[in-house]
Amino acid sequence: MQPDYWQKRWAEGRIGWHQPEVNALLRRHWSALALPAGCHVFVPLCGKSADMAWLAAQGHQVLGVELARDACAAFFAENGLLPEVAAQRSFQRYRSARIELLAGDAFGLDAHDLAQCSAGYDRAALIALPPDMRQRYAGQVLGKLPIGCRTLLVTLEYPQHEKAGPPFSVDQAEVERLFAAHWRIELLERRNILAQQPGFQAEGVIRLHSAAYRLSKASAD
Image (cartoon, rainbow, N blue to C red):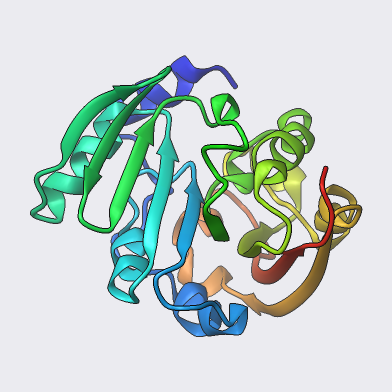
């Protein structure tokens, strides 16, 4: 998927992946990461997610990256924040209090950008990417997080032939294939959510689960 695809979706307001409420799996399982107060949390492909405000309210410093500048600006406006805006290499940086968003291509981040991050949160990044990009994302984006980093990964699982993504189905076998070489992986929860997703039902999906994993970076990519 090219950047223009996502830019167009934001410009046209076709952002069905956006959740106005804080994700339930984040609330339930964030404590499982056992993170120190004030640590930096990386949120890739963050959009204008309410989850970032929740993470900041827990005392964390949040670093998000999002391709669409409209999404970054909307996050601060909708949360009543006035960010400082400045250029940072190929990114436009928005910063206010505990939250910093980089508008630009996540694949343009380097290890220095993420060096302070001891945690990550991915609810909508991995499942937004088609299969040929997921391996690259695992190695070139999450792979730049430092050793010891702990990440909460949330995925969806459904019969892929029943619906065209995004969001795409990413099952446990694929999570293992993508991350097992450098991360310790623990499945925290898998739950049936089809009844709460009428959009998936309308497209003919007959089985839908969400899954939450704890990933711990054990070695360098």
